[in-house]
Amino acid sequence: MIRIGQGYDVHRLKKGRRLVLGGKVIPFEKGLDGHSDADVLLHAVMDAILGALALGDIGRHFPDTDPAYKDADSRRLLQKTALLVRDNHFRVGNVDATVVAQKPKLAPFIWEMRQNIASDLNVSVADVSVKATTSENIGMIGREEGICAMAVCLLIGSRDKI
Image (cartoon, rainbow, N blue to C red; front, side, top):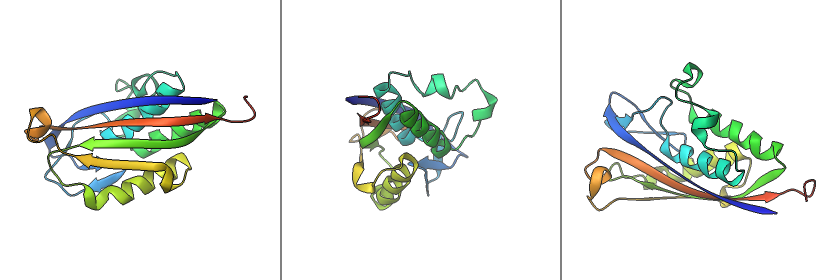
């Protein structure tokens, strides 16, 4: 049994916050504004996984109205999401994600982002793709007002469930 999920997240950039993408702190003069660490990449990955499991979205599991998630490390939330995969008798086949940011340039950090996601999902780095692109100076991302990410994942059912 296979399931496919897709996820998307976007946050505004704000001075006075650190920029965290894929669990990696990126040197930049602004960070993403949000209740947690606002890691749009990990949030998109979690939404893709939760969608494949038909379990709603991250707002349902980690609501921004809950003080427990204030400034939460999204890697910990991804690890909890990975437990839901296991508890529902699936495993992650692969994840493919794209971050859209005009600045900063993310290429030097992609490998570590992939490693973080793979570690948190208990899969090989070869099963995690992270890409970065710009929006060609168009829209809020092009004006450097925010960053977004999209992700898809493939979940594979275990023999126990089939």
